Amino acid sequence: MKDKIKLSVLDLCPLLSGKTAYESLVHVLELARHVESLGYERYWMAEHHDMEGIGSSSPEVLIAHVAQGTSKIRVGSGGIMLPNHSTYHMAEVFRTLEALYPGRIDLGLGRAPGSGSRATQALRRGNLGADNFPEELEDLIKYCRDEFPLKAIPIKVDIPEIWMLGSSDFGARLAAQRGLPYAFAQHFSGLSAIEVIKLYIRNFRPSEFLLAPSAMMACHIICADTDEEADRLALSSDLSFALFFQTGRNMPLPSVAEAEKYSMSEFDRAQVRASFPKFVGSPETIKKMLKPYQEAGINQFMVTTMIYDQEARRKSYKLISDMLQVE
Image 1 (tube, helix red, strand yellow):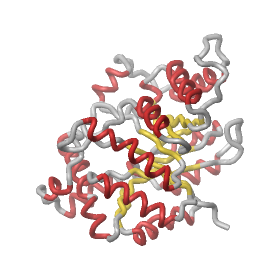
Image 2 (image 1 turned 90 degrees about the horizontal axis):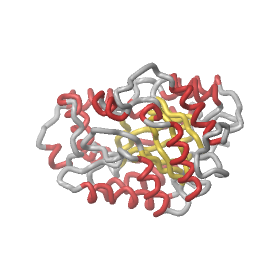
Image 3 (image 1 turned 180 degrees about the vertical axis):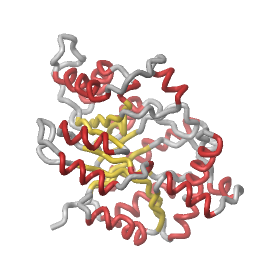
Image 4 (image 1 turned 90 degrees about the vertical axis):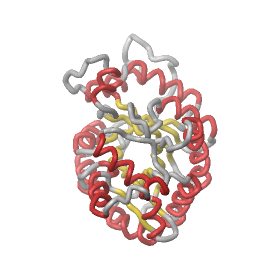
């Protein structure tokens, strides 16, 4: 018997062209409630800085907002970029969240800056020294276990579920070594999720956190009734990523009408999708696209959907849910 497919959401909290920050961010909770009603398991917010089209600069604030407005879906970070923060403070932040919403908080961790060099320097106060992410991870876990004299308040709170994130084999190896669940970012990695997740499974060591490997693939999916409609909806994110390549700036997500005025060539769109892989099509097309991953044993998908029209965005998640028969 095949394992049940588990679906989750990664929300970059897109800031929409022509809309205020409030008008854009109000959709975060609306979408969370929608996918909760569809049976999605997790709702994560990413951490990005100095990007005008992405509103998830403070995932911990958005986590509290979404957790307060939902009842059962797990809510977390996808992820906290740990080198940008004090491990002690993050232990306190996520202990507080776990105390407020027990059994519902995920702490996804990454080591990328989530920003350009200027923001990284500002976040780290100019300290761009050697990569000591494994040590920072250990410190965070120790704070959550009360293994330091310095206590992360509130004490006597369960450890949030910790996930390792990655777009290369570094995170996969570290997650396997530490016995943590692993989420691979296929939506912006040129590597094969199948190969990286197989590496994680082969090297996994059971731990107090996890007895058997647990892996999830994060992917960008745009689903509509027809392939043509899905491709039209994908114009917004195609143009947004293309402009990022050309100018170095991430602009507010354009509407389809705005994107159509640019008359992007098929070559440009193909180039963008090669750098930022995306599954675009009808439910039947998406099902075929995901089949090789399912046959390889991947049964957890974390879906990000960058669509300007919010009704079409919610419908995309519904079509995906129906197609994969979420229970």
